[in-house]
Amino acid sequence: MLRQSAAWLPHPLLSLLLLVLWLLLNNTATPGHLVLGAVLGIIIPLFTRRFWPQRLVVGHFSTVMHLAGRVVADIIRANFSVAKVVLGPRRAIRPMFVKVPLDVESDFAVSLLASVISLTPGTVSADIDVENRFLLVHALSIEDPDDLVQQIKSRYEALIKEIFP
Image (cartoon, rainbow, N blue to C red; front, side, top):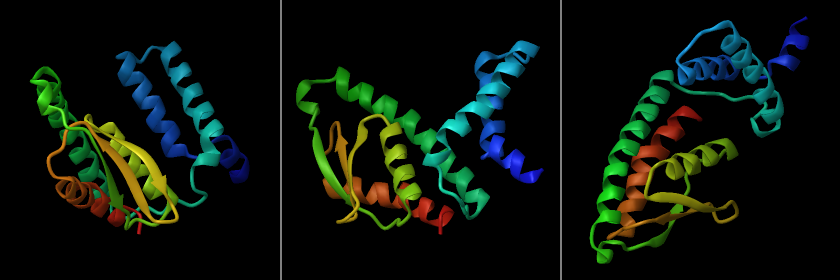
């Protein structure tokens, strides 16, 4: 019985999260939205299960929440910075590619780091070099590439290393 439910719900917490997010996005809990959210909560993990690790070991839950809060705060802050750069004089835009050496080891942790960087306005992960262990990041406007590397490693990678030991 347990194996059958694991086949239908490969990631039950993800299914629950998708249902809750669906209800929050629609700002309603009508029966139709409950059913649609539940269907999405079942179908999306089923179709994406091959992208998830078989056994995902997560470290401290408080660190997960700390990382999530930091990412949200950085996204808000970066929106204002990008708006200032884009609306300001053209000479303020100094795009650059920067190689960020990776200390995280699992594919999932590297993907999470790349996603966090891409979520933050003004930066995007352009390439992951698995052999040489670096992430190529494009920044919209940067003065010191070493400073960007240190920020990524201290603000995100260190927490991700704690979460996925």
